[in-house]
Structures are given as C-alpha cells and as structure tokens.
Image (cartoon, rainbow, N blue to C red):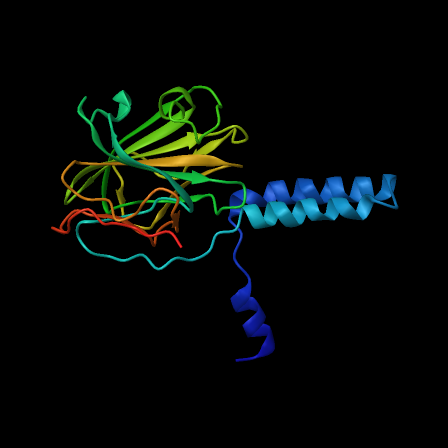
Length: 232
C-alpha cells in the first residue's frame, strides 16, 4: 500500500451537510486572521473543529434478526422503563427505554437501530433544554420514528439539546431501512432514545460508551438474563 493510500485510509469522510458550515468557518478564520494578525491564526481551529464534528465514519453493523443496535455515538445516559412519547402511538404502557447522550465531540450521524419499514415519522416542536435531563424526552424539540421490524415495533427519537438547533431526517415514512443505515443527523449536541417492547434485556448499562450502528443495545431473540457490569 502506498503512503498516499495509507493516509487516505486514515482520513474520516465528512458528511455533505457539513460542507456549508466548514466554508463559513473558513471565511470567519480568514476575516479574523486579517483583522487580528497576531492572534487570528487561532480562528483556524474553528473550521478544523467543524470538520471534525461532521465526520461520518463507516461502521460494521451486526446483522441478525432480533438485534437492536445503537442509533448514535455517545454515552448511555438511561436504561430503564418509560412510557414512549404519545406521537409514536406505541401505547401508554412502559417500554424498555435506552437513551444515548451525544456531546459536541461525538459523531452526530443517526443510524437505524433495526431493519424494517418506517411506519411513522413525526416532528414535534419544543424547548431546547439540556438533553441529558429526563424531561427532555417530553419537552424538547424532537423527531420520532417507528420502525416495524420482524421483532415488533421499535421507536427511535432524535432529541435536540441546549446547543442543537436543527434535527435532520434523511428518510421518509413508508420506506424500508436496514439496521445501521444513516437516517438523520442532529447538529451540535443532542440525544437519541430507543424504545423496545418489554421482555428483552438491555445489554448495555448507564455510563457505557455506545458506537452508532455497532454497539448492540438489545437482543430480542436471546433468553439471557439481565447482565451485571463492573466498573474498573
């Protein structure tokens, strides 16, 4: 393998949604570099960070019936039972809910947790509270999807946060989607919730780091009992 090919292999692609923001950051850096010659060079860190934020790495998604993979990169902030948002129309009984909190340093591409048909997509305007708060699930701006999989209906909710001001969804209602496929993006800090029918056990714990499209959150076909975890 040539040196050029080796370097290219290490460079993470940038999602097209980020190009306009990178261009804007470059223009700002040029302006401040001209206005403030001594410290203007610091503003060149801005386009580098924006490019880093919109990175879109490839992922290796495990493909097997019953697996529910993480829809986002980030920290698992909640694992437990919760009633899904009413717009999902998944009933008023608690489901297994797993929340992934994305900091500004995480990859912000959202990926489908399961394969199936997108039964419903509902955008709900709301507040921009800290996405790590429990009430953010009900009060914040969000975009909700229901995917009809072979193991039942799975809810997936994109939630805006303090800094996030735009939720993007790349798919449409009625489309078929494959587990791990890109379906959306949330700009600059957010959270993603997954709702799974009760009976399955979560394979992750709060505080764990999840990788979108790769980390298995739930195996609905497994009879495994609740896992225990050790923090070291």
